[in-house]
Image (cartoon, rainbow, N blue to C red; front, side, top):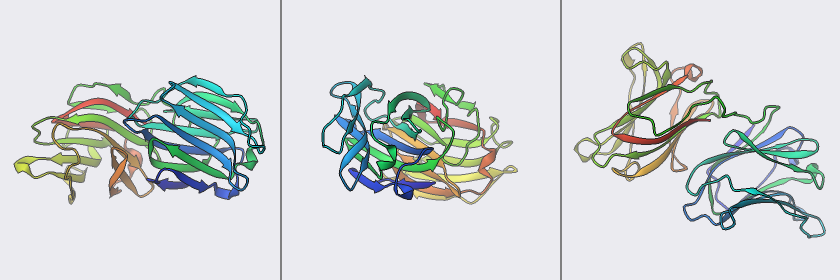
Length: 298
């Protein structure tokens, strides 16, 4: 498995192992820009500059176009389907290579298939271009598709606050919790906890506590863990313009092997080293001066 964080768009990189193989999975965590017109994710043969698989999201047409640009530099017939993306809304896209076709899943749901028109093994490069921000690109080999099925995972819109729910499955390495929300206009503080069980303090084990504070005009984000009713040492970062009163945000808490990666609006702001085994996380709780539009476990 290989992961690239916050690549600059347009982005071009060689594929691990030198070429695409059966079982290869490419995972893109991204977000179309607020004024997105089009963006593309392409698998190409870098030496001869032809495109084995062209995946082109077109907001100006409301469709995704798929195609192949052959070694003769001619495009084949287009395959089109309805656009599954929304401007300024994060997505989780998976491209899996099979012997005879590509399979594409978006946000844990199968989206489309594309039969190989030239050999998949000729693809040696990934290109991402256009009006999109990308937080991570992952390359892995797996027999699971979609990697993180969404059917039984936490996916709640407009929950009341305080909020507490199971995430309906493990928080494994690479999994993430997404919170789409808005800070209230005159906040004091709010918090988001990844924990074992849905109980309120002091009884739960809180593996990760994310706590923006605004008292006295000082904006700071406090991160901590609660074990056996005892808080550990605080990890603090100045929030600056991040999570300013009244602003909307997309907060992603992504489990990595040795830490949680915290992103706000597709930008990594901090890492929090695991103090308690993250495998026990099975619930998320939210409370305080925040309005939540959606909570998703991926």
